[in-house]
Amino acid sequence: MSTFIEAIWMVLAPDVMLAILLSAIYGLVVGSLPGLSATMATALLVPVTFYLSPIAAVATIITASAMAIFSGDIPGCLLRIPGTPASAAYTDEAYAMTRKGQAEMALGICLWFSALGGVFGTLSLILMAPLLAEFALSFSTFEYFWLAFLGLMCATLVARSSPVKAIAAMLLGLLIACVGIENPAGTPRFTFGLTDLLGGIEVVPALVGCFAVAEVMRAMSVPEPPPLPRRKFGSILAGQWKLTKEYPVQQARGNVIGIIIGVLPGAGADMAAWVSYAMAKRFSKTPEKFGTGHPEGLIEAGASNNASLASGWVPSLLFGIPGDTITAIAIGVLYMKGLNPGPTLFTEKASSMYALYIIFMLGNIIMIPLGIIMIRLASYVLRLKRYAIMPVIVLLCAVGSFATGNNLFLVITVAAFGCIGYLMEKNGYPVAALVLGVVMGSMVEQHFITSLIKSDGSILPFFERPVSATLAAITIGLFIWPLAVWLWRKRPGQTVATA
Figure 1 (cartoon, one colour):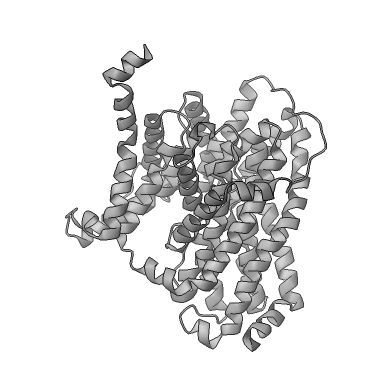
Figure 2 (figure 1 turned 180 degrees about the vertical axis):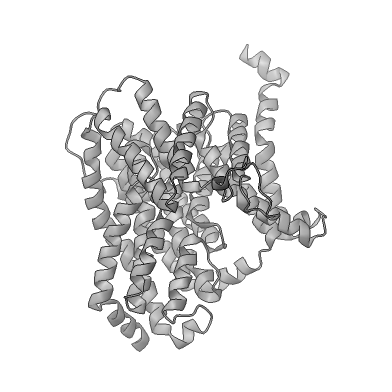
């Protein structure tokens, strides 16, 4: 108890409280701007942490990343442009609710269930850290390959169009992920002699181009739709408790999936959101409502991505193994401030660990009032005319992409992927599946090649380990699912019945 009280006083220190407040506002603003991801928000904070106390330094990373993950949902709801990659899985669903006049409901779901997911993720960090870390360490490259491949196959479940087109778009994303020299062989691929392509295609510019620029092109090519009814923006949290009681299974499943995926090194909030949204659709009693503004998928995916954020700290704190890119940055800050990750951290500096737990809880609690303020400020975008807002979006896309690497080529990448995204969606190919392939491609290839090297070219180890075999069965089942559905619809009895 004395250690816990000491931790409370450490968090209540003026510099720590100020750091939490300012980093929360910073994370909300950065996450809501298309092209500026939660990873970028935390990376830009590292120079600031040099001048902060250890607890205040880690508090800025924790708070800013949690706020940025949530606020990435705001432009997705209002403009169909995900602010962060973790929001891409359910952007279409949230935007459909906005077009139905339920913008406050969609934003309220994202805010309320993100906060609840963050709280549950923190509880997992407190209660199950040793168990989850031990489970994650039992994974080899064989399991990671199937896990990444399973994430790719989720494209067939979240697609509103033909599953075959979803797989085609996903394979195009995998091809794009092959560009560059960052592959197991270290060989330049598809660079066409351009030095700018040696580093591969950056994920953030590809994401911004496919969603933001393509949306601008689509908006400029069609007549402006009727404006949403002018009315006072309603209560953000109205009806959220009713939804909490109506969808307890979806919320619990999203929390569990987010916790499990978050604790696996290299997975992170992006994969958690995709898998959770796919699971929500797969097990829903009304899957035909997905994509039309149905809250079920939003609830599960929104809870999942913030739950994974907290659980991603489990392997980071215990073994110094980053759960995602954000915790990889955090590990550097921990070492810099003398909080070296490892089992001894929980014994020698127990008060600091309790302080981190309190900061996680506090960050998810203040997310609700600060999130409401941010939503109300951002809601004015609904009243703007298209000719006024679209140039600003293009400017933000260009500036945000340039900021990721201070390279003009990234702006060209955004424009190119804008054209690709526009043409794909015009012909019925889901852009989200393409982005998923780009994000997951390098992870799939890396673990596949590493596994083959370990097994001396044999594929049997991919199916011999119990966990690997289970993941393989699920993944292969999802891969052949489109073919099975197609054959089922083509059976003779179905044809006669239809006629």
